[in-house]
Length: 236
Image (cartoon, rainbow, N blue to C red; front, side, top):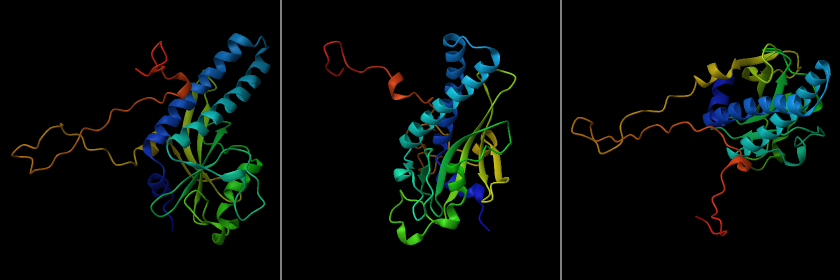
């Protein structure tokens, strides 16, 4: 039996998930601020507008981040070997044994399955419909791939906030999660990076040198990064 959790941990880089968390939380807050400052709507329409803007901002943020971390977006939005069209960005990450097709979806509330649409319906039927003979490289889905979702649930009590972020796998009948774990718990599955001082090994170190773990850096989208050119147009 496939260990779904292990397969996803092996295929998805830890820093991909950390950067997705940072970006999607930021986009949720941005959507709230846009509606609050720019759209004079009544409360009901404000909530609806915020939800639509939040999802589009998060979807675009997801697409940018997965590519920065080596994810391969499905070519032409079609599941190879099928006539199933995908209208949302799905990215493939190759693991040592199994690949993962990672999508993004918003849950109505934590642990509630996201609404079924054509893209997700195509994703959950991945293992049934793909033909191995059509798959040539690591960018293409394979019949043993797992379709997983990076999930967010808005905070109903605090506008502009996210209540929960999770990793989920929906069964092929699209009736329930066959795997679901909060991102915080899921990240605990990655092996901790060793932390020992830099520098040459001492006499009691057995000749081993291990570098310090990198400090986590928040994701900064390209358009928000500082300009490195000088005033005269030459690189500094």
